[in-house]
Length: 379
Image (cartoon, rainbow, N blue to C red):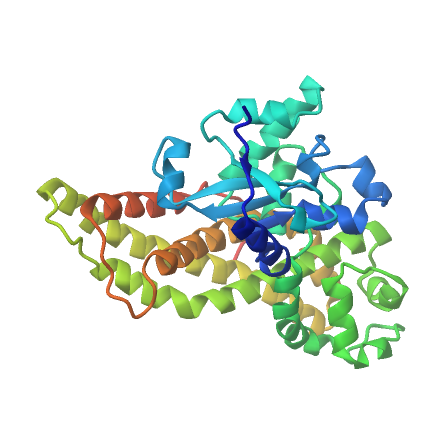
């Protein structure tokens, strides 16, 4: 009997909603990538997963419900869910799904395996890496995969349609300083409308219309395409921080003040009080690190737009991916805390939680904020 969960009418509706409205950081939509790029050479020659079934999956950072926690064998607030559409061309048909490392996980992998043991181990390693990430944002994910020498085609690392639409006005504002600027003997009148430039950046479209910018930055075509992707990454992280900041302080204050509804032991109380203090410091530290890292981008961008130094911006873009892991890890972890807290304790409602549940939530939050040291640009 298969251990894969089959769909219900409710899950079909959720799947359709996920297709149209999921955030980039929450979902890796390989179904959409397949629809758009299945005949492209890069998609075919450098796949994400070797298994065709997995390579058309939707992978999701999922908030666990009470009846799902036991599937993982340990307390977690979120898990990585793999959704396998029965027909990737029509999500209304439904899907099967499983959690990475749930009970019977290896048997589940055998059901979707290619039959090539080498490929299967490769795909299992990829799933392990994805499960360990705090979010599935494409810039963090791509840099983490590169560290492990996995290099899927760039088409697998696009922003979701929902995030692209929400980001567009922010991108236009970010690009306004570039409009009308000029390099030596380079015509940039094509940037009179920021809409056009914003559309090109969002689509990773390093095409003929961006030739003046490519020449102004003195970059080869392949390097310029990579630079456009990296540039979008920093705009994405600035937008994410801008969206997240108003939510951080209220949630931090609620975490600091929440008390369990039952009577904790002295040992539990000592841990929870100390954990709350550590969490406040770690959240603040993560936000400060993100802001400082983004200042490096802002300085390089000012050198381009205000100081007429395209070489400085070019140099920054070439080295930029080394910063993505730090940015994505910290923003993803803080977003996990904020979004789970709001899911568990809606704004305006009086929070009610047992000692055991609060202990587990605080421990999970602390684990999500345990960062590896990273090399980065000097401030």
